[in-house]
Image (cartoon, rainbow, N blue to C red; front, side, top):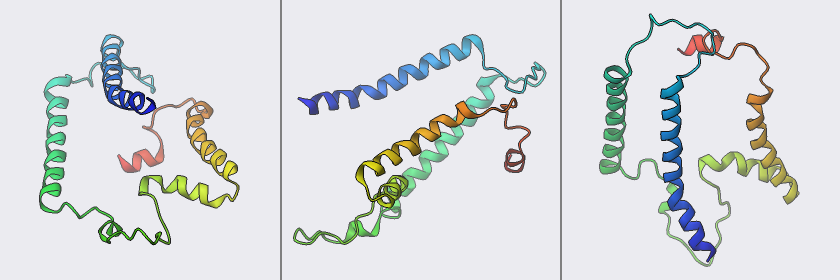
Length: 153
């Protein structure tokens, strides 16, 4: 019973995200986006469709071509070498490590010996990232005048 609800949630969740995206774009089209710098100039505006639509289409085609070539000609290039060793049901591997995108959570959980403390530290590390925009007190919201942004862009 719980599994069927879980499956229904995972099936419906992409549609919910797509609906929220369409709603966001609808509101953005109605009101327009705000400019955090406070500099409103109609002289710098260009139309969205011919320029950005083709740019996004070209980027999507390049990404799709790259992933297709990778999947067709070298499917094991990005795989973990441990996946190619045959499994032994009698011996547990000495060190099971998670995928790279879970390594931060794994490091936090391993560094604190108390299980509850490790889980609380993991939750706190995620909540700190959610509090960063709230605790940001600078009047300047744009990245235009920041040194790292000027160096990168």
